[in-house]
Amino acid sequence: MSKVIAVFGAGTGLGVSVARRFGREGFRVALVARRKDRLDALVEVLAGEGIEAVAFPADLSQPAGVPALVEAIHDRFGRIDVVEYGPISGDQGFTPAAELDAATLGGLTPLLLLTPVEVVRALLPEWTERGEGTFLLAQGYSAAQPMPRLSGLGPVMAATRNYLYSLNAELADKGIYAGALTIASLIARSEVSAAAQAAFESADGPHFPVADPDDLAELCWDMHTKRDRVEQFHPESPTPQTPA
Image (cartoon, rainbow, N blue to C red; front, side, top):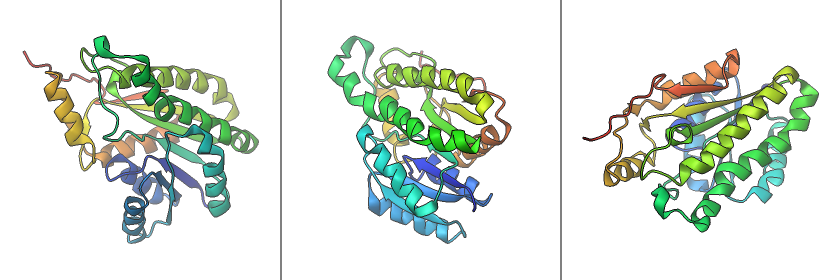
């Protein structure tokens, strides 16, 4: 039975590029996001390239729905070998740290922290029994490097990053790999790049380069196959330019 990658937060940027890269290696693909119409369009694109993909519409801000979602993917494919989790959308924005409140952080926490934890919990029995599995987290640079006026997302992603480092150390000897791709760039063809750039500009924040999602997907494949680092930055030495 061929392997399966589940792309959580599949979109026109990194998500479809990851699906395409793993699909070229014979993986079948589960595409997960809220909007069925967009998922169906991605399924059609991948099918035209000879990649078997199926849409699984789901609201990833609802961690309680993860067990049923994972079961639905299992019912269709019989297994899940790799997860790529990166569901940032235009609905999640930056907030200056001085303006943060509990409600803002609470609104971000389910999607960015609680759901990935529940995904891992749902898959650990299968991965432990098989002796292999991969969880790849795609996150923004503010998870690792705080920036003035660009908070909110960062503190929550930083908590998930902390969890992932611990997870990697605990599971490596069981054949299970957890890694983070930390992206200090905008992503070409992504639906949220324009919104993110506008947020940076309005905050007089850093100017990030634009990355080709196919290059990022290649990094995901490299991390999955080599398993030689917990975190990969892109660019490797991030140097976003801050306006004078």
